[in-house]
Image (cartoon, rainbow, N blue to C red; front, side, top):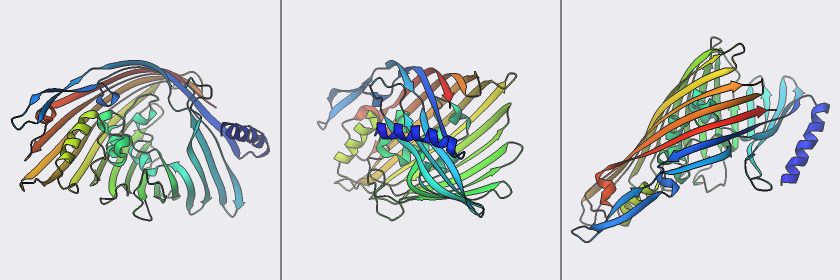
Length: 424
């Protein structure tokens, strides 16, 4: 696979001279990050039995220990081909192929190449029609071009985390600080309208047999629509909606979001928001070890498993200031909060109503400075502090895990990163 991709890139270099519309492009982004985390998903959570209840159930108490790490990592390196060909009558064929790669991996061949974008389309006076794997229009609404999106290593977005907490299932949860929404959509067709008085409309659908991400109950696994407005002054706004069929036992999960901002060469401010909801199987959005332990206890009660509701919402606000002769130094900061709630209710064997709830509250702050060394090369220094407050409550039933039912937990994550980026 690696040899084929390398051969393709070498061939593309030759094509670039023969076809001016074909471009070889890429970026290398490497950095070093120091982190200190109380994240219970990292294997630093212990469950110790400290006694038994009056009914003989074991009573557990949690014990956590922070973990420290220093790592040299890749933060978004990629290489790609893109181009176009005129087909006449104001119609152009466009294409884009891009692979991410881990430039920091220590193996002989690294982690290889992973497809990010592979699309082909037609650009006409009526708009652009594209097929393949490409940028998620909903991600463009809730994070892309915001200040949090401009961070290299850090810059966790609370709004993108809220949407991801619902739609990613076990792959992400805000209580693991790793829940941001899909950046790309595969097996998709996307239409983008031409700009009309500054307004651009986008609509996309996904249809696939991938049963790991989607439940495949319907012909259309996912659809999304969005509307964007841009003004010459630097003001812009975006709104969007996404619905996905991700669970066999529930209605479609959905999320809606918005972004508003004002950007100039000297300074800018952006704000973004997302809300998401899912009524699905209990496995979605569990995330860390606390959640897993708690909901295993719920499932052991053999209650009705269809009455679940999982909601999340988040917002971010960010600002930047660029200064220097060529605006070559940029300071940026972003702050956000997100809340995720999972609720379940059902009847016990004695016909009592049992209610169980988990609440996660995320707060995240990121600050950074970027120093441009040239038009294509820059250094960065970034810091991020994130905190999750997690709380559980039950009624109508007795759990063995009383420790987390009676109190809330806080988990903190601190990271400092320095790195370099070069585009080509």
